[in-house]
Amino acid sequence: MNLNQDLTITALGSRKSLWGEGPIWWKDALYYVDIEGKAIIRLDPQNGNETVWQLDQRIGCIAPCANGQLLYAGDRGIARFNLDTAQSVALCDPESDRPDNRFNDGKCDPSGHFWAGTINMKKVRGTAALYCLDPEQNLELKLSGLTNSNGLAWSSDGRRFFHIDTPTRSISTYDFQAEGGLITASRTLVDTEAAGFDSSPDGMCIDSEDRLWVAFCHGACVACFDSQNGRLLRTVQLPVVETTACTFGGPHMNQLFVTTGIKSDQLEPDAGKVFVIEGLNATGHPPHCFSG
Image (cartoon, rainbow, N blue to C red; front, side):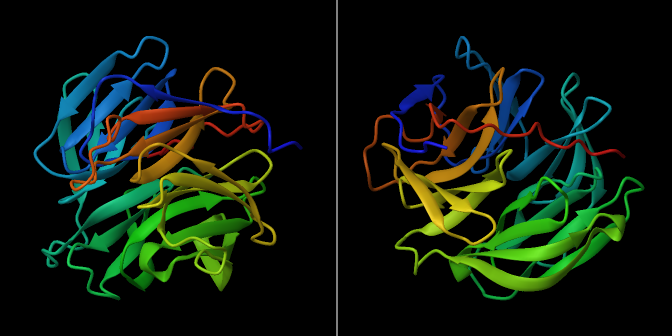
């Protein structure tokens, strides 16, 4: 595959999120969150139209539900959100006793279970975690001792799980068993610092050929890695330093959408916008839906 062809990179819409994150391609549009803006946004890439649902807490991530609603995870735990009524129904909050923590990145696994991790806002190491919510709304702790649980993905055969705890500056891989969502045999797939990145790995997605695409916070780029051996395959530079997360979408699932944030000490005209990268010759998967 030729990963060195010319690319088109375009800023979409008019919204400049304070900290865009968690993009998913769903119902022929891009949905994402503005964490610090406390909002969920729907963006139609064809015309740039945006619909905004304003909430009363920071939302770290969203995931589609099989019934047409959304799940979100944020300051006050995990909730179900009705897009038509803009009403939330709280489901659980496992870290209500940790006021410095909030939920961050998350998505559903191939079995329809919702995985979401937390972040310690004061950067106290080892105080965050990764959880899994099953369709019966039972919550299970999957990983503890984290600091900033971030990007996650599953291989196309469902046998490997990938996860980023941002301060480690690495991508970890695990053996994954769909039954029970068991993750074992942790090992480091990519040491991003050793790979030449002086910024921090953030959100992540996987394409149909099991290549990992990782947005680097403070790095103005998205990088592609081989999920088998961790080899760096490509780096795509963007005109905004705070590149936060990415997902494939579009009619043919071959456009890579990248969310961004605003760095207060830099005047970047398109900071906070969503960018679309075309010409990567790669395709992704639609998001898995929560089956509960």
